[in-house]
Length: 403
Image (cartoon, rainbow, N blue to C red; front, side):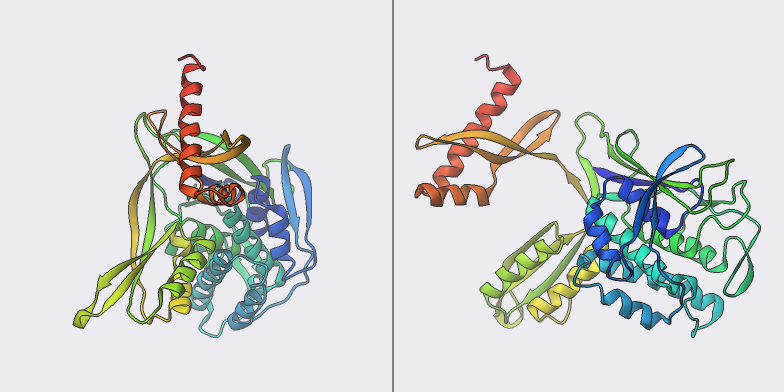
């Protein structure tokens, strides 16, 4: 299980989160394209903060403020370049900010700093970066918020800012004041971490670190590194244990949709990030035949997928069974040499692992189908040849080729 751990030991802001995720290996081209839907091309540079190398993101946007509907319209304008799950996540981040701002300032509050183009670009960039990393879950360590007072659009305020304090409270995120004067955690940073933390996971316990990234803030104090650290880790399950996570299950019953439409819809669900999608024949009320369509997805994509189900299938209701616990076998894709009809080709097989050994092995269908069409032989024969070669390859690896 790949888990993303945020360590905001010197606070958190939107640009720091985006930079830390990029430094962890998020797809820079996709993130920059998403941010450019809101601002001109952001500048990404490498800086040092108290001796720590970090990435710095500068949106180079001009100040401004907007109402909540104007912010939502700005986000929606990026729909053609931002992945749907990331866009839905960005909308939820601003929903969190709106709820906090309205509780503090009233129902007609304007977004000041958090409604500017740089904040919108930071939120879209961070959500896109998280989506590109394909983490199975997110853990947020205690956030250092700072202490004292700061000055903003509404005058002087105590730290943490009122909106920040409410966002942290509603998300049940742990916070500490720390030893540093000033605002270390902004409302944007708090809302992003609060949204990301909804990708809950069991405590990773022992883990191996796959990547470490640092995102720099603007200030450069000498006494402490003004950076946010992000780490991608792989939890080390106990010997013989299967990995675990949670998923949402979306379901709807249909009796007025053709099989062709359902098949197309399932393809759309998988392309939009579903972990699995299926349709099962059922008998509905009054003896009518129909289908139960089921989509398995991560929590952060369930709302977007439910909307997609409604649009593609025309259904008026989607049931959600939230936070279903599941066990997951480790899986890998292996390339193996296969010879059919005198032709040698490398073909992919999906392997499932348990107790350090492969217990299941299956040929990937699309490459097998394409080769079957090329050879003009049944695809079932190609699949059988690939899997036979795959099992022999696995045996040779374990025995060193000695029979």
